[in-house]
Image (cartoon, rainbow, N blue to C red; front, side, top):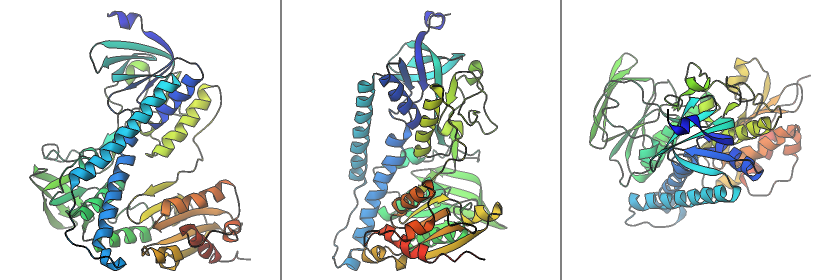
Length: 469
């Protein structure tokens, strides 16, 4: 037995993974004077600033600029010799990522939390051994330990898929060229956002999904709106597809074979992007040696306080099965941070806002019609096309709609859905109204600056049917 195993370094708090929840806990407790160490395998700050949320939105914005160039005549601007240089697009993204990493390193330095780069795994309860990136080993034992290992793109066990060396979002965001024909397997958040972006850069794009409609858990009008958007931009959309075999190699030539209903399916392209869900990073990190159990889907098993099955061990973010959003991991930080200090904060009943960064965006807070009907919750519905919003008219962004669900017995907002320009920002206005427990009439009767996107809420809420007697 090596010396580090018999004499682990003692810390108040040991955190495995430096994603949103973990790093915030680290900085908070280090500033309080506690001894804190964060173990990170590769990405300082986790996936969000390096390979996911922020870099993808950076690339998506470049694609938006490209789309405006191609629409330039509509705005009275002539265009000649429009050419997209993906190496420059990538460099802009890389500069932003490096800036974000530098900010994180500065936060570690100022907080006093120690950042250790290496691969960590549990070797005993509350004890993690780290194979250091620059060689050697260290072992840490914490009074409290937080697991924050995140998730990765799922590679389904389809024959030939692994051999095809498909892109995930990580590799797609590092391309320095425009794929001739990109096959996108999976039409969730990653698939839809990147499919549209690469179509706007000039790729042929085929979007493939196993469900009978896009974002199948959402309301049908959202699925219809997103599919119309894809088709109007020249993407091929193939739903209800079951892929049974993959041939070739991504980056050269790749073929997807399968079925669509009763018919055979044969799709060809030059590149393949896999965007069909996420797998928690929980295997191979020694959880069994720490007494930490996992769920059937591989997530760390936690209760509503984000405690694992091992005393003094907590889990936050994707690996804990929390909704896969950075803002939820940040809320997990608040839950665990309070509970380590002796509080009793829970995850139950919290709001989960989300935004799909297609153009236009799709955002929702609270209940959808589908959820309300499934739960037997009655509601009053109001709906407004974006073409009726003055700001949308001025910027020629009139695709989509907004809708709101209002309680039938009182005037509380049950849910808000928007498919339209600036949806994420407009949603926040509604969310604050919901958090305050205000009736929808408070927002309807507010004075909102003209002409802004949130101003459309006045027209929307003015169309809410009266309460039935």
